[in-house]
Length: 120
Image (cartoon, rainbow, N blue to C red):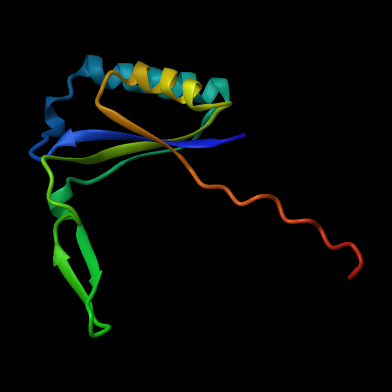
């Protein structure tokens, strides 16, 4: 079954303290529904983008490490779910329940490798 990243976007200056009890309850309920439905593989909140470190390879082969996110943007990913669902439409339905700006992307998956039974 395909897996999808549901990335929650927060404004660059997002303050988690604005999340009231009702919002926290709603997200907790959504997580419980996802678990009960067997679709949630992983969930995580992320620290604010200014706490990130970015690595870039330079033309001379060295690695440049800088403070902050890789991309300069007005929004950054603040949390994520990995869902295993039938298709993108089902992922979209779960994402709509979040009621926050989200981005959905299907995860690349390797095809199963054949089992070599001759070497046993």
